[in-house]
Length: 237
Image (cartoon, rainbow, N blue to C red; front, side):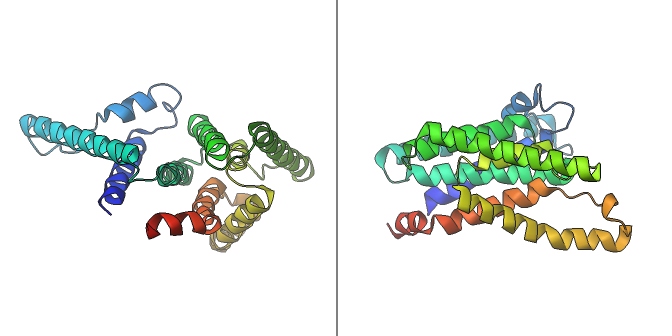
């Protein structure tokens, strides 16, 4: 239980740092550096000396928890699969928040999700890397073609490029049937949001849906549904 609390604390700390430092203008340049260094001035009311010591304590706590979790992984007390799914959840939560506020899914984070999915599916679940790449590429092509046809017929964007890339990244984590369930769940979750917007806008053309948010949250929920056996055995031990 202590390991879970420590892992949760570190991931929430990382998500907070990335969100507080993210802006659409700098996410391709120095965003990761700024978020990693945590140059955040949240305690404007306290003195510089106090703020300096708080930052030192914060860094020591992060280092200590990180060192503790590393030892637990090496000793086998903290299963690697649990860390992987915790990272998966943290990345999708970060994408969900960014897309909700900025209607944007940064390519860098989506690529990290894709790379982590390829490594996890290959080394932990035993899938073939070539098959995974083909599935992700095929998924991207299918959704890109669907969007292109929709644009030709309706002359408006129905599915953003970021959403298509996110779906391709999720294809490295799920098989085709599971991915269809993820997409269907995200669409059903987004439906009340569309209805709520339509009540005030009275036009379907004016509705803007952060579909990446619903897709990310759906991916998180479905991961714990599809892999109940893994989590049951992990927490059972």
